[in-house]
Image (cartoon, rainbow, N blue to C red):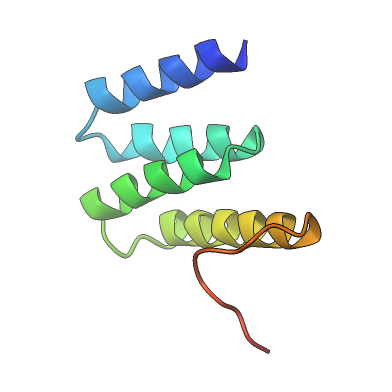
Length: 85
């Protein structure tokens, strides 16, 4: 079922390539299903179409942070941003 949903998300992303709302909504949907890499891709597309939007950047950052902390807790090698306190 997830594969079908991922295929549908990819098709929507392609078919509505210039629609910020579609990319943002797909990003939220994918993140809710823990598909953080795909979610970040959609948020990045939305940001390219509407640069600097707070909601887009917030959700992109949140997804990247969750992806990183989830991978850390699983002991996997990291990629992406390094957060320091």
